Image (cartoon, rainbow, N blue to C red; front, side):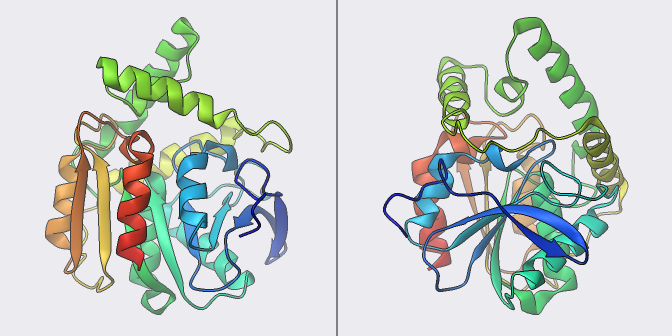
Length: 279
């Protein structure tokens, strides 16, 4: 990696995917199996924790992107996880890769599970963070919990992620402040915020995922790291344990006194866990 290239200054690029422009950023070495990042509800490129990205990119090629209709990517956001997965695969193919590692966070974890089931040869290893299986416990409450946090954020002039991603202990509140500060480090060439239409489409996709019958994950043979905080409000942490029970080759890492954003709160530990797993 160029010593001066960090997520703070990595250029935003665009690639044509079947006639639609997809915004993305790449950093890290130009060789090896790339780590493709799949993001959460409402997130754009600037919502990735730079400590996580830079930590991975010190050793691995990393590519973050806005899926169809999100942030600076063009097109209309799909209302199903299945269609989001198809778009992500088309993006990966457009970049010329025939094998990748996937890091799916929250909604991105739903997309990652779908990709690996539909295109098993494309995926070498899988990292699922703050996520759960189709029909998982409490996923049907994501919309209500998110809207309540947005209202609370508006009343307290705080980003809703303060309440959604972190515990309300002293430790959790401190981690939330530090995380929100890190997200503002990039000042130039920032991404467009998600549109209300795209946000609504993502909520529809999550609601449909929550209503699906529990999925049989036994066909996923790829080694999988499942990570989360031990007190996830959005996608209850029991779903992480459920994933590990259902996946044939999975290991679980739960970070203490941490919520949905546990992998950001414990970014140093998570990056070390992830790199060790991917190696």
